[in-house]
Figure 1 (tube, rainbow, N blue to C red):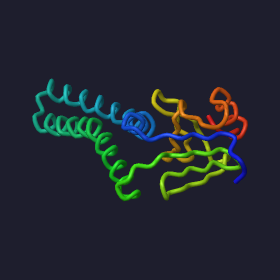
Figure 2 (figure 1 turned 120 degrees about the horizontal axis):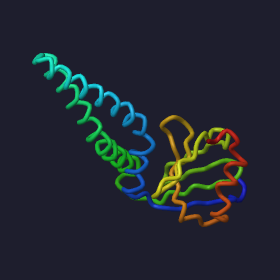
Figure 3 (figure 1 turned 180 degrees about the vertical axis):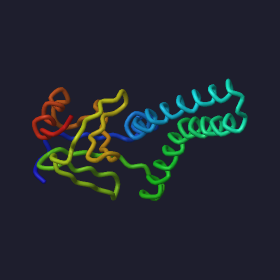
Length: 167
């Protein structure tokens, strides 16, 4: 790989991972879960009004399960991501290094990953991090305040130029 045009170095924080999980990975799940929870609530109220105890119990249980999933699954996913990182790096914490040159190269400890700019389909600009999506649930985290090479102000224009399919 040639000299990187941009380089981003950072240590992942819980805030970054929580925000990525809640606002990127679980975004559609929250939307659909909210719709189904609302539907279950409406059906619960209708069956309560009609005096149908069996259906009330069924819709009440459905509502409880949906809400429990919406509340607890992001924190369980965060725990799983952190455990996978610990296992991958033998309990060590490593700096993430993302280099942008001919390709995008990500390195964290002994783990490395490379992808082409054509694989990037979306940029999520969150408050604690940016996420370059290269699949429906796969992303590369960046800390927009930790560029060590390149002008951070021109980074988004650079990405849009290299990734024309990016939203």
